[in-house]
Length: 124
Image (cartoon, one colour):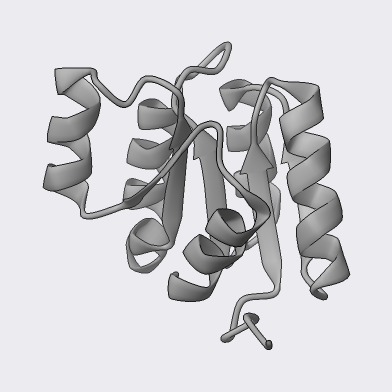
């Protein structure tokens, strides 16, 4: 199954190293170029230097949180603001649900399966 759909460069912003590495391994095997950022500050620095096609962003990360990174992407690259997939284990938070509704971004709920990850990327 080809899930690349005009997506080549993916930035994964995730502070949990195991999750970041698993996502990287899975998506690299599908032919994507993956960059990892363990916090929002590093992510913003990377976004300034490289154009990414898709962002997988953990909402609760050190430095600038995931929502702040999303706002930065929306300001700098408005067309790519719809190519954001949020990852979170905090699926019951009213703030998260309101933000998901407001932005229209996809939400990948932790823990997620390989199929969940691939489906979210394909639908992006």
